[in-house]
Length: 150
Image (cartoon, rainbow, N blue to C red; front, side, top):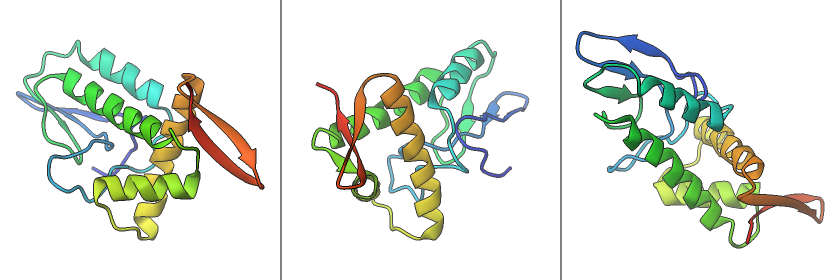
């Protein structure tokens, strides 16, 4: 199954588990990616996780993350990543600098594929965090900057 992004959650039911193909979760070991094929709507993804809580499954297996017995673990990971981005934006950052810090945080090496995948995911988080009024954006010197709201 390919990368579908965190906004589109593919469920494949097995006898005793449900596979969720979502792809933005920090692993305990060094990850190779924190983003899937383009996260489009973090709020919709969280809403989907709330809905699949209703499934009678013993195990949820997201792509690029450890299996979880409780969907709450997956929700917590989304909020942990969001909190990390807000903390990074305590000092206003343009996107390129923010993305570089995210790569550093997760121990990733920048290449074209990761730049696009992780960049897309980070942009989605920025949009969601701005809509949630946790960060703000402003222009300075023809650059867009992101900053945490106080």
